[in-house]
Length: 594
Image (cartoon, rainbow, N blue to C red; front, side, top):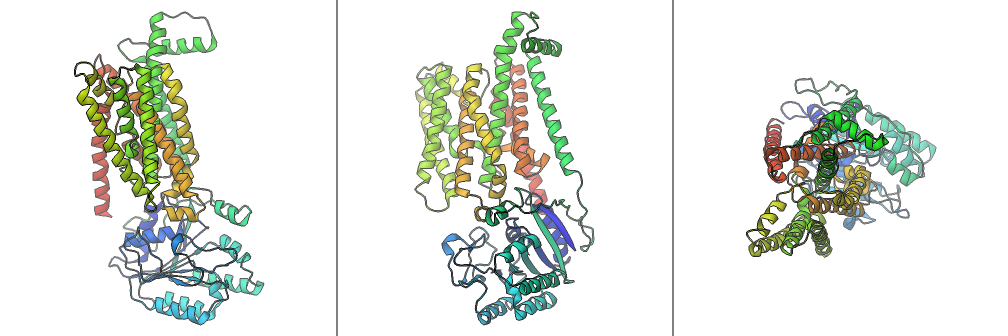
C-alpha cells in the first residue's frame, strides 16, 4: 500500500502516519517501510528526522552508492564534502543528529562503478544486518547492487525475518529509469532490476510512502543533471491517521487545500484594505468613508471636485504617509523575521538578530545628540545599521566552520557593543530635550512619517522583500539543512548570504524611519504559518500581509489613545508577548501529548 505525502510541509503528519504503522502500541515491529521519491525530494532527510522522532537506536545506517569516478557523481546529504573519498568504506558522521549512529554508518564507493568486489560487499552487508538495534536502514537501495542474486535474497530474507523494522529508501521509478540509463546496463540487466524492485516493493510486510517535495519543482534537480524535463506528477498531500484508527488503514486525501489557501489570502487582503480605510477615516479629525472615496476618485480622475484644505492636509500630508510607512515597516519586519527563522532554523530568531536594529538605534541617538533634523536622523540611523551588518559579516568571514552559529554569536557581540555606545550617548545627552527624544525614538513611532521618507525607504524595503520572495523555494530547502539543500542543487552559501543581506537591509531601513518596533518580526511569522502552513511559498507572502495590517492597526490605536500618541513598541509588546507565551504553551502541550 502506497501513500503520497507533500514534503517537508506535511512532515508532522507524515511522522505520525509512519509511527502508527511501523510499530504497535507496545513499540514492537508491526511493518517495514519503503520511502520513495524523486531526486531531491527529501527521502533521506525524512528518515533522519524519523530516527530522532522515534528515539531509535539503529543497528546502523547503510548507504549504497556506486560512483562513476570520471563523472565524480559522489556525495549527497549523508556524506560531508570533507569526508568524501573514491575508494573503500567510509564512516559517515552527523554532527546535528545526536541519535544518529556514528561508528556503524558506511558508504560503499567504488572507482569502477558497478564492477566492485562482490565478496567484500556481501561481507559488509552481512556484518551490517547482523548488528543489534531498534531499526535497520538501507538507503539508496534499488540500484545495480540488486543484480547480485545473493544480495537481493539477503534483502528479501531481512524483510521476512528481521525482528526490528527495516526501512528501505530508493528513487521512485521515474528517477530510477534516468539513473540506470546512465549506468551502461544491458537491456537484460535493466529488466532484472525492474523485476527485483517490484518484488521488494510488493513484499507483504512493506508499506510505502512516496514524497513529493513541495518547496520546489520536483523535476528541477533532474533537469540540471539529465538536461531534460521530467514529467510532472501531481501528488495530493495526505492527512496522518487519527490515533484511534487501525494502523493498517490508509489516510484520506486532503481536497481543496489550494482553495483554502486562496480563501485565506483573500481574507487577509480584504482585511488589509479594511484596515487602511479605517486608518484614513479615524483620528482626531474624523472623515467619512464616502468623503475619502470621493477625494481620491477626484484626484485620480481629475473630476474637479473641490474639498476643504483640512481634508487635503490630513489625508495627503498626515495619514496617507503614515499608513504607507506602516505598511512598509510592518511587512518588511515580518518578512525579515520570517527569513531569519528559516535560515537559522530557529523559531526565536527576529529581525535584530544580526545587530541591525541596535546599530540603527545607535546612529539615531548620535544624530539626535548632534542636533540633526529628521532627515539626518534617518540617514545616520540607516548608515550605522548598515555598518553593523557589514561588521558582523566581516568578523564572520574569519571563521572557517559553523558559519551560522558564528554569524549569530557575532551579531550578539556587535549588538552588545553598539548597545553600550547607545548607553553612553544617553548618559551624555541633555536630560531635558535630547534624552526624552532619544528614548521616544527608540520605542518606535510613525508620527514623523513624511513622503520624503517613503521615497527613501520604499525602494530598499520593497526590493528586499522582492528578493526574499523570489528565493522562497530555496529558503524552503534550506530549512531542511545545509547539506540536504546542497544535495538538491541549491548554492547554499550564496543563497544564504543574499537572503541575510536582503533581510538585514530591510530591517535597518525600517528601523531608521520608524524607530525600534519589537515583536512584529518574531510573532507575525508564526501566525502566518498557523494560517497557511509552513511552506514558505505561501507563509512569506502571508507574513508580509499580516505584518503590514498589524502595524497599521496598532498605529491607529496608538494615535487615538492619547493626543501625543503611544510609542508603537509598547503596544506591540503588549500584544506580542502574551501571544508568544500562548505559542510556547501550545507547543509544550503538543510535545507532552505526542
